[in-house]
Every structure is written in structure tokens, then in C-alpha cells.
Amino acid sequence: MQTPAPFEYERATSLQGAIASLQEHEDSRIVAGGHSLLPMMKLRLAQPSRLIDINDLTDLEYIREEGDEIAIGALTRHVDLLKSELLWERFPVFRDAELVIADPVVRNRGTIGGSLCQADAAEDLSAVCAALKATVVITGAEGTRTVKMDEFHLGPWMTAVGADEILTEVRFASKPGAGSAHEKVERRAGDWAIAAAAAALWLEDGGKIADAGIALSAVGMTTIDLTRAEALLRGETPSDALFEQAGQIASEDCSPHADGRGPVDYKRHLAGVLTKRALRTAAARALS
Amino acid sequence: MNISISINGETVTRDVEPRTLLVHFIRDTPGLTGTHWGCDTSNCGACIVQIDGKPVKSCTTLAAMTQGHEVSTVESLEKDGELDPIQQGFHEKHALHCGFCTPGMLMTTRALLDENPNPTEEEIRMAISGSICRCTGYKNIVAAVQWAAEHQEAKA
Image: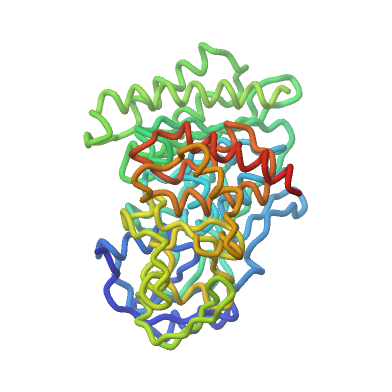
């Protein structure tokens, strides 16, 4: 029987109350869906002294347009990301990813905030948000601060969120000419990725690539930003040959380790192929 | 801590450790052992119950988290001695063998039909992708859901 070690439990009734409790109790953790944290606690990989349940803070559950940005509340469930018409229309990369994150029952509980804070290198939404050059909003007692996705993950299971702070929102620009896609290979339905790639392209009126974002899951210690491939794409016209080159860079710039999901050369190969495919789909979607 | 949870419309109160998982609370306190305790890792789906009508894996949910919400288990399906169409479908189509995954399958597919009364085969397969059956394969389970969809429509 797997049971977490003992801990205290409280249900937060306000964001400020949750932050005050984090400050008051050392080693306390926020819990939302719990579908990453509770398994970690069962395995004693996490052993918080107190869980602060924020499921009642429904103000943090939203997907909305704010000016030229899209804002997603941290408590937004996977199922709502999957079903969002706004995201499907602007950033279908979310639906691509959500269709292969765990299974529909798990997606009823898990949240975007929890996924990002889990900071598992194999987690898919981290790569999606990285590819979209998202900004994470972190709230503490003194107010909010923002951190760019490429500075959010400090290492495996480590994020920029402080001990007495809460991730409250994810934001990214909704510029015209965007196309995005996510590609993943997994051993079986609902598993963590062997490798996965998220890509976003923003095309100019003339069809050239104004900006690109590419991030890989499961092939390094954290989500990998393919900055070298992004630089290669900027200013170029989309083509299979160009995306082939970007894929080549993905294979070179990832740092997978061998495990039950496959050897290193296979994962590098996948990183390249999936990057190319994601870019191809992203470009087609940007043009449609 | 003292918690009260509404399970199948009845309030159940007990003093529990905060770490008590919902699956154990359901099985131990009201003694509703229809909900099965399987892999303990949210992979197998044997422990699926509905919380406010949505299927959820109860091995990865704290009992304390469900206070103020409505938990429904497989025992809630049969009403006045009459099987729910989804149960009848599993019977008609021989959609179980050992029966271990069945409670989770029933609660998942009941929620599916509540949301989508005429699902395609693909939608059914997607819906049950969080449950593992090691006996029948999934063919008869899909057929059972289709049977229930047809027959509850005829009934309605």
C-alpha cells in the first residue's frame, strides 16, 4: 500500500491566506489536482509538512484574452485547456499536447500550474509554454512578479517559485501569423514522453518567419529550449529543408540519458524527427 | 481531522488522518467495496469514482479534498433493483471477466454517456483510456457502452 507520510492539511479560502500559511509553515506545499504531487509523496520523493489545498480558489481557473495576450489561471484543469475554443483557434499546440497528457480521467484533475511547478523534464505543458515564450506570474505576500519560461525551471523538480509564493498565472502574446504544434512519442497511451517537441512559428505578411519557439520534453534534465534552432529559423522562409536543419540541431542540442524508455541515440533521433514534424505542422497552421 | 463527505447522497463523517486517500475512505468507512483499489499510481483506473459527476481516480485524491463535493461510486448506479443501462450493457455484451476494472469502467462510461449520449467508438476508446482491462480486451467494453447508448435512448 502506498500512502504519503503524515502531513497537516488545510483548505485555503483566499490566495492571501494560502500565501500567509506558506510563510507560517515551513516545508508546506500547495496542492491543486494533486496528480503529480501525491504520487511523489507516496514515493517519499516529496515530504511536505503541510498541504494547502487551493481547489476552492476558483478565481484562478480561467482562459481569457487580455489585450494582445492570452492569460491562463494556474488552477485551469487539463480538460479545460483541451476543450478551449480560444486556444484551439490561436494555439492548437495546447490541444495537441493535452490529447496525449495522461488520460481523460487524470485530465479532469490536473492543472497547468501544477504541471509547470512539478518541473519534470518529461512534462509536456512546460515545453508548450516555453515554445510560446510564455511568462509565468508568481504571487507572494509583497505582490506579483513575472518570470520568463526560460528562467522558470532551475533544474529537475526545481522552479523559480519561492517557498512562500504561488504560481498564479501563465501569459503569452497572441500575435497574428502564429502557428503551433506538439509532437510526442510515448511507449503506450498516457505515458510520459520518450521524447516530445513543441513548436511555434510567427510568420510575417510576406511568409518569412518573424519569430520561432521550440522546446523539447524528456531529453534533458529540464525542458530544453532550442535557441540555436530558433535563431536559424528567424528571417527565413519555411521549407522542409529548413525544418530538417532545425531537426538536426534538436538532435545535437538535447542531452537525453538512456533508460527504460530507450537509448540515447534513439532519443536524439526522435528529438530531431519530432522537431521537424512539429515545425512543419506549425507552419501549415500559420498559413491556413 | 474530522471530515464529512457526501457519498451517494449520504453524508459520511469520520476522524481521519489528512493523508487518507479517498479510495480507502470509501471502502473502509461506509464499507462500499465496489470501488477497487488497484495500482495506487493513477494508472489502472480501478478506483475511479465520480466527483460532482466527473470521473476521478480516488487513489490520487485525498478524502479531505472532497468535503463539500458529491462523490458517487458504482453502488449508486443500480436504482430500486434496476440496473443502470450501462450496467445492463456490460451484462449483455459480456464486457467483464474478472471484474476488477469494471467499477472504474462503469463510472467512467456513465459520465461519458451523461455528457455525450451518442459517442463514437473512438470517443468511447478515448474515454476509457485511463482504465486498464487485462481480461477481455476492450472490444466488448466498447460494445457494452454502445448497447447502453442505444437502450437508454430508447428508454428516454
